[in-house]
Image 1: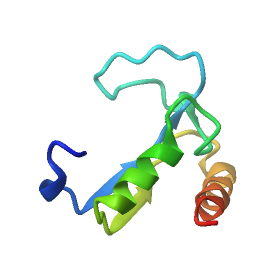
Image 2: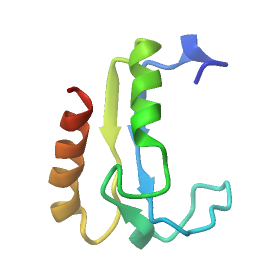
Image 3: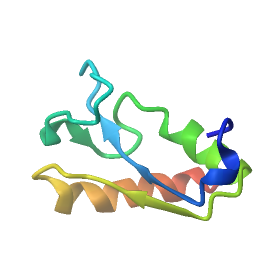
Length: 83
């Protein structure tokens, strides 16, 4: 984000189950999506950096079959970062 900071006005937030080896294509099994902050991605660090860079909009991306249960938990996690 720092390298192209003037290019970012929004980003999506997505976390992946711990232990899943990524393949850099963005095409992992949708069922590896987990509640933000519970996986292997440093969501807290990304959100802090995004705020520092002035990114205005952040969207939760969750394509798992548990999306209805997970998104409210992800929202609670994001709210906890504001404290």
